[in-house]
Image 1 (cartoon, helix red, strand yellow):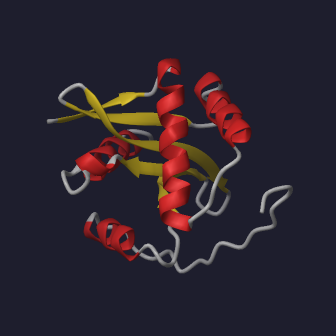
Image 2: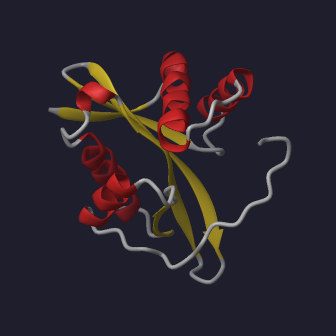
Length: 152
């Protein structure tokens, strides 16, 4: 059975390792370890920046998800952005993401100020796109544009 819990400071190294694996697997990118470590620590220390969740199976960490927030003036509500989703290889295809998503969706539906859930996914990550669609998510018809400062 999969249980979902809030991440704690002791999860720092695991979250860093999983974020690094996520970047390598999904975008073939190597992350700067110092920046990653500091970024994860900041979220764990400051709940205004985001919130990590850990999925456990049989008491063993199996996956993670992070939430961040974006205010929508059009909807007078907050979008919760799903980020840093990772399921450890031995636990894939066992409903870990479904459990994480269900937990977060349940929390969001209890908050009247939440306008919806969003995430971004790399165009080439077809398997993830299919998982998201099976959970009822639709293409938002937006393309993410970005300017990066100091990160290649």
